Image 1 (cartoon, rainbow, N blue to C red):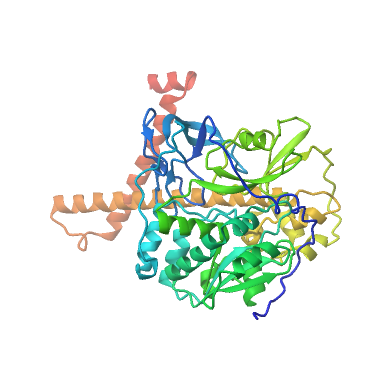
Image 2: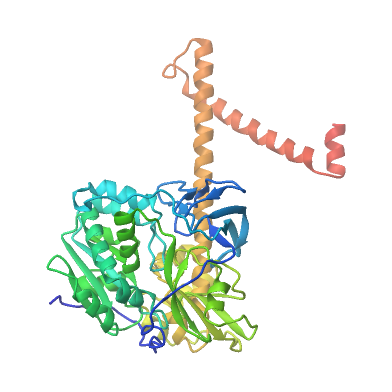
Length: 508
């Protein structure tokens, strides 16, 4: 028996799972239109590989990956591309993003896909390439491209592969139902991922309130896999929390599990890997829990790109202004005003809740409850002050990047401060600063290369070599070029400025 360890903080929450975890999932019908965002994952968005009017087959690539941390997007069914443009998407900071609109033809005809024979004899790098080409990302919610983790495993020694089946948020049972209905997919996919990363050990973990899922897996695991039940406590399914529970190890601050020899994937990701390897199928569908104020709470097998409102209608719900829609769980989910957005690869749950009166945010009373429940052992109160005052350097110093946005701190705050909102805003601003800094570095590098080329050309004209050119003269030339470029930009701005300033420039 594996020794289990405790993690700090956390909450005991009412599960509300008995409504959906005992029902068979329902195959959702084809919608009239599907909206496929170019970015359904962490990293760079995919780039369209089709045009409006093109006819495509199910599983065909319609958008190609645009970099290493990127994956392609595939047609969820056969049909016609009717538009490529901005549409509503489930995202915490933007309301619309580029999407490919697909109108199904009703045939659901597959593209020419091929399985991989004898995966255990296939080179790990080949499996990693196949998983990338099938657009597989982390289906537990983060959406990190799966092939990147697999490549890390190929390049580093992996001691333990963890397959995460711990659904710690209330209401969500999509992984529970997936395991109960397709346990063989999960077990076989775990073995395939283990081969891809060459892990010494492989552990499949579920919560201790998922007895039926545990029993389904127990019938299939052998000595090569370890099946473990972990205590039900939120957020036990968090990556760092589960690693600590199962191994007693802590992922370093700003570090990754691979830095301590661990790779972790969701059970739905393992099932997707099984389908990719044995059938050649890319990710075109997923299990989604629909719960809350609907007539028939249930898990749906939904094609990616299906509108959320269609899923709700299947469960007997019509949108009302008296209710709010949550994409994801009640603790970490995205609250939206309208369900006119698509199910994407990371959509695991849709919850309908009654609109409650908005309570005003009160001043912090420094009670310390937020620190007591923080599973990352942070100081939420301090991070709140730094985020609110835009002191992002101090926020970084206090490990803002280690915040998993679980919402435990906001849940217990007696002043009803939306702490996670402040943390997300601060993270977004830090990201923008880093992007601007990166762009400035690239501009400096381009300018340095330009000066170097000009010096080489000047040296060539005078018969001098770069080594023989006078350094002081080079410095003066560089400074003069910089001044001239700045003056040129200023003259351009003045020339484009309307009104008297423009007339003065022209008259001069």
